[in-house]
Length: 252
Ligand code: HPA
Image 1 (cartoon, rainbow, N blue to C red):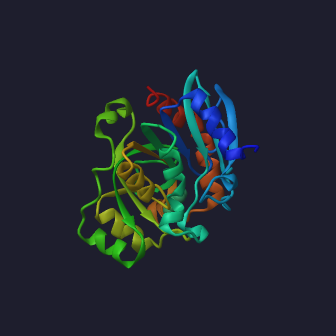
Image 2: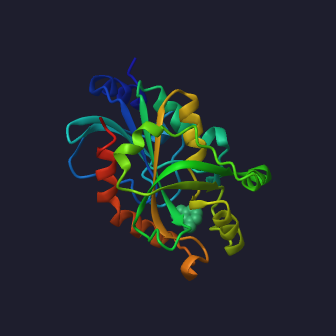
Image 3: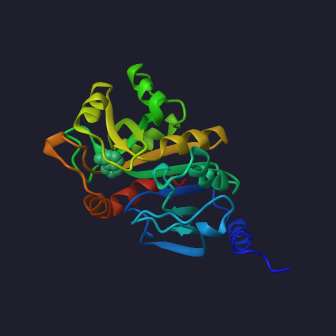
């Protein structure tokens, strides 16, 4: 019997032996320079996954070498606002955790809540709020973000970038100015529509978790901003090289 595209991809993965997987978010999902691909498979071929519907997300899993270091690249992710449940939106993390990796690097595009964190800069996430559903927003009132899922011992390698708290909302609408002000009062530095539930699932499955936000825009009302997806994609594409310098420092 012939094997499926997913089985074939896993056979190649077993020969490449990557220890690290990188999930590439909005506008970051094209292959970097110095990456040599060994195999790729569409999410639609992977159990429990579907093709993503958001522009800027290729919806493929690639395995190969970045500067001769083996890794898995998830080109794009699945979001709650595509109509998925939390279980469906975290299926990618479960499939990655099954690939004998030790570390996962989650990247995303996010809005900045601080005038000093200008669009194009990168933030390393040290904690998050998961603001999904009514109870999620209630958790903000307690001002106790989730810290323990992020691998603190890897921050030394990221000392050139600021650290901050990320808030994950369901989307797809950008926040209102009042929501942004509530986040600012609780010390949030970046707001986006992913990553928090992925980080929790990855940690539950025993992976070391690092997360990096590309701050693509000021969040609604910060410096008078009204965010647009086109701006998000454009800025994240411009930050691609810098993001890869940081990812490279996490591949050992
Ligand atoms: N808000 C939420 N998600 C985002 C933003 C934002 O301003 N920018 C990029 N993703």
